[in-house]
Length: 326
Ligand SMILES: C[S@@+](CC[C@H](N)C(=O)[O-])C[C@H]1O[C@@H](n2cnc3c(N)ncnc32)[C@H](O)[C@@H]1O
Image 1: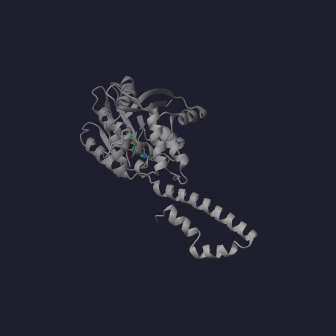
Image 2: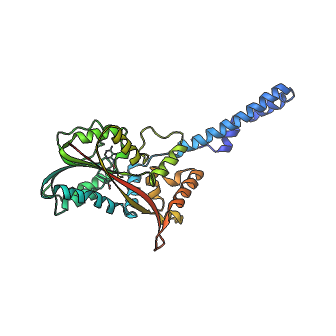
Image 3: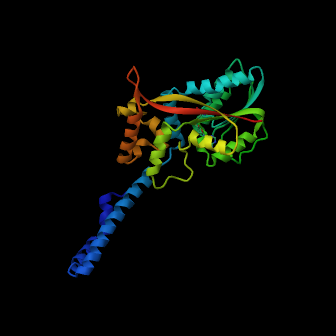
């Protein structure tokens, strides 16, 4: 259904009703009722309209759209460097020379797992990589075909608190994938239960500044955010509270990343100009109502800094949380 405000208001007071309304107007008390009715109908119809438009426009990204937006985000961000620094080095520090069984929850296209497995200072005996997005999983499989001395299992399914495996791991990675859990607290417990004693669960999660703020603002405006929404609403604030309240010991490291959103800010009509913002919102930026588009645009513009080479950089905090199994 595609309503316009004009059509919808007219359908509330059709023409024949309008004629009998003229008749009613001769009686003052009925006229008062009618005017009240028309005003109420007007407000109702305009609220309904706004609701309908928002319901119509809020569509989660498809697998393919998600993969495209994610690819653009990665190409225009320095976050992989941060991830390398925050994840690979600590694994080397703790496990150099030892055989490691590893699990990765939400491995994406497997770039990080590939670097870990190929790292000459590490000996990855096995990897269980879970990745439900088919586009990502295909790339992950291509990489895993070259992991000759590592037993690899690519599981194209969703991890959640009911996930089963008889394997146990020294290292479990959840790199920017916790957002997609319906019950993140239970998913963390489940992941922890697969650790060997002395093993480590490493969770990468955005801090409160960055894409999380855009998603939070957008969802506040929406009437029908799906109950299970792959959003970026979860941030490290929540995770730190959860771990602290449940007496789970952890170590936290924060890094500042930035995403190049120059094409978005300059409103360049390139095929990928909105992708990074689309990724944060998990819905296509260009399909939002124009008032929401403006609001998100302003939020991005207020936050960007301009680099020496005149790029517009959107800052984001990334937190890395290390939970050891004792
Ligand atoms: C933001 S990407 C991060 C990918 C990769 N870890 C990286 O840092 O490049 C999140 C990944 O989690 C995957 N994902 C979504 N829901 C998931 C679930 N329930 N279980 C496991 N992975 C999931 C997505 O398909 C996506 O590839």
